[in-house]
Image (tube, rainbow, N blue to C red; front, side, top):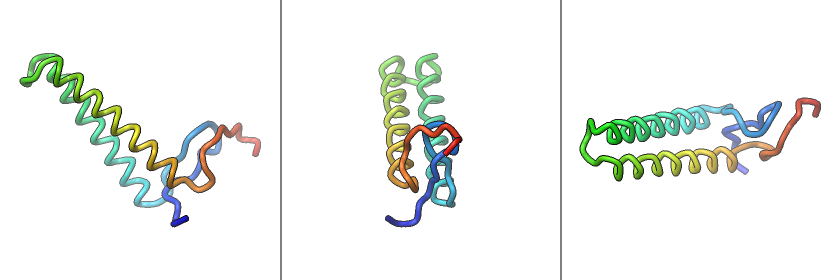
Amino acid sequence: MTKAWFKPKRIGYGAVPISWQGWAVMLGGALATAAALNAAMLAWLGLIAGGAALALGLTILALVILVALTTVASRRTDGGWHWRNGRE
């Protein structure tokens, strides 16, 4: 495996970034998700054209971004993901 971008959390399930690539993925994913959900809210409120259909599409886009972010993080984590109770 190439150099890991994330390490497993000490307690719980998931991973935390340990390299600049991991931090870039997390920041990019967070900004893209926030932008999609913000635009969805504006569409739902009628402040931008598109209405409920656009809001639903952007919400689905945000979910796809989160799934992609989780997939990248799990594949680039050193040691894999499983529940850790802090006693290991």
